Image (cartoon, rainbow, N blue to C red; front, side, top):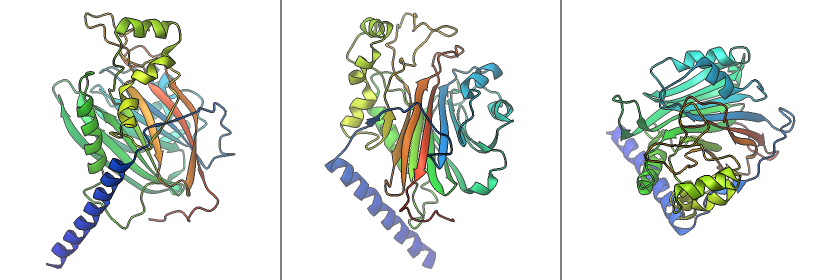
Length: 340
């Protein structure tokens, strides 16, 4: 009986938190804040933690050479976070470990069929990790048939006293399914790490979403889009981006930050080339692959973005990977780091 009463109390507390968040989001919203990218990063000098984040829809194919290009040779970061979608039936974790073996080691992974997320830390850094939890949430998809699982996998980690959540997702395709994607984002946010939710635990200080969010460029035909890209004027297309539009309405990712979209749309390419889709569908090029982050308490930590770019020299997929370099600094007046 006592356990039932405790469970009911926890449920009520959690419901109040959720209702308060929903009411706040309805009353005001900020949209996605575009932040400038500072390409200079003094690793471990001006920052307490640097994180390299990569997302890539692999289209069911992988090679060791592609993963080498994906990670790169410049390892001036603490954590390496790799989110993958449409992963082939191979042990990609083994290949990734081989790529980074001289500098980093796998610390955590979250896998839901073709949707996978890996976190690597520097060699001999285990003492810096005080918490590591994983979770996943499915929102449908084709699953085992053609391994295009929809949903999200997540890793929560306390590293060097900084509490972080990384969410790698693959949302529904097609330009018309905007509200479906919005709904999936909300369901994922609500359900991840909810089964063992502790109302007294200290919340994450930063959340990073990455993946094939599948939001498209709309309201303009494919050939005008391609002409603007060819003239290096794709920055003019951001006003047509569904993700930024929906965030501006307060539907998704309210208060998140994203680097300026200076790189070309990452989908859809002809496999094996740098040419956009020439099939009978002639899809509108779009920024489907994104990396966004949100600081939950600016009094505790601050963040600076030092890279946000596509990796255009990988040709095995119809998507180009996207990489971000995010550096975090604990503010002087911040509360002492969590020990849980």
